[in-house]
Length: 216
Ligand code: SAH
Image (cartoon, rainbow, N blue to C red; front, side, top):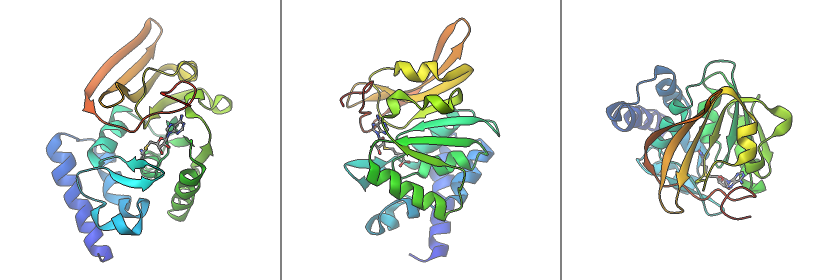
């Protein structure tokens, strides 16, 4: 596909998959219009990059469906300058969408191969402030805490305890939570009176591994 075709495919993706399904935050829609999603997948998959489904990215992992990326980014309700922890960098695509919101992103990926590839695509596209760390994201990143928002890009059996401790009061954690084969996208607000949960519908993500995930 030529560059123009990718730009058009991106426009169509935003209209048909996001706007029509109720995503209306202009900052998220603009970010999804700008970020070249096809560069976050292998050459063989590039022509499918703007279709309405997840795609394989190697190591048995996937880049989420565009709508799911938009839903997670809007559920996080980010404000410029905020400090965000992302767990499960994968391809780095959501990372780029977050960086486009003018926030500082610290991202953790368990697979060194995926982390390295994501970091190099992000650098190539000019997201110089994003740091991708290799490690178990269920432990968070204590030296950079507290975070205004934490986004987990893999299915969690429950909230990893260390992450709650690294979320500031008034902060929110967004994650797919539930069973191994079906989850609900949840937003949890950390409030003085306790945790408040909101639900954004069913979803299917690859498993969160690690000490506070499904398996190590
Ligand atoms: N949002 C990503 C998709 C993430 S797929 C994108 O846009 O491409 C989920 C990722 O979480 C996978 O890459 C997987 O390796 C990673 N992962 C799973 N468990 C993890 C853990 N404990 N810490 C960090 N990353 C983890």
